Length: 124
Image (cartoon, rainbow, N blue to C red; front, side, top):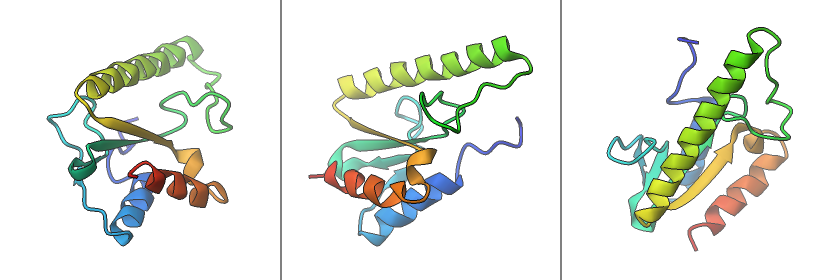
């Protein structure tokens, strides 16, 4: 697990390149905000979390499969991640931030264009 990256992942880079190509400027991994959002757009008071389907327990996703070994430990780990995500979202919302969460499966294949279109709609 120590080799799993938390920053500059492929899904994150796709979103960053897209936003930059459309002229949006952002900050990365702002430590002052709860959950250190992957992308922060201060002008729009919006934060973007780009979540891995497995690590954040994306229900109904083919990439979220609980391993057969140490099943209980993985269930607790993923539930803890989800609870932490919920707590961070509540804190950010109470502070007036708009939250956008993108899962990695939404950036694969045919889903990517509609995800990017929905992302642009969040700013207007």
